[in-house]
Image 1 (spheres, rainbow, N blue to C red):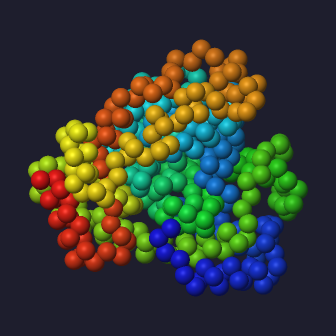
Image 2: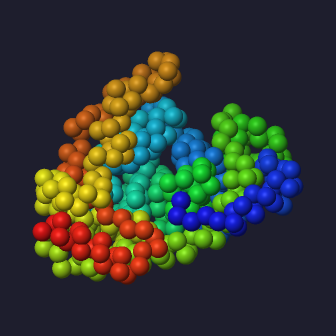
Image 3: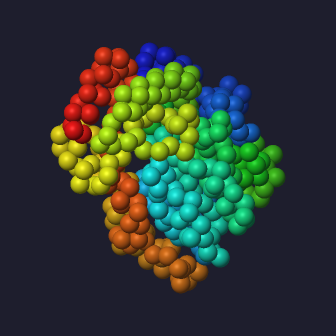
Length: 387
């Protein structure tokens, strides 16, 4: 979370004074109004506010009917929640390498498609947009769904379109560590009305509370319980009004640092699929080798090597590497008959290109309110550490 203040306090107070904390589908409720505001801001026909980004991904996968016997291609660099969501519906995640942009490599993505593949799940990690032109072209060629994980890139764009609005559906997260936040929460973004209905049904096993149950055209089925509360929505409605200001300052800081790094000989700023649409969360410095990146970081002492970030890299996904997915072996997707005989295994050495790209990168991050003098000092520290 970047900014929060008295406006959020007042919004929560408004809900408490009404004594209606539970979302019910009437025109005055915070959740319903937030959904409309999110849909308008991100350019989609429908938005469903849920309890987390993971819940959003699971709801989308379930809505698309993905399950046992299916494979979903995910990048090897993403938070473990992304492959977990695929396993949650009984399908198998297949890993694709990330390229120098640290997003899914379209070339390797093509190699990972089999007759079991149902969807591609690109992740706009750390504010970096994926190559959505290539991904959408591949998906169209093979008749695949595209589910965008935009949880770490709220407000980012690709080719002028909001991340999460380009594919079949998109997921957002409003966890505390995201661009805007209510502590937890998430959203499904989707244009297709029937996919929206199915997501809605799945996210609320108690759909009978809602007036729109009588209006559903898709048959009701048993789902989960991923509802979000009025308190969360009230905070998020204020946070959404802060988004453009946050993005403006993040991008100002990133642009300023990139300009200061333009003459560096020891490193380059990693290539972006859309530098204008990049959220600006961090500046990824790319070195000639992993050893150089580590020597730089030992001198600089304030960067992050993404290879080391726990549970964001496939080598740290211990439950998945061990195929220890559920507490009951009969519900473990890896034990299901329909999932046996797959071509690709997730092992600690299955994506060497990803390990190389992550190991050669150091994230340098500045405060959102950094002054030009502070950015000068930070850039000088980086350049001195590199030399």
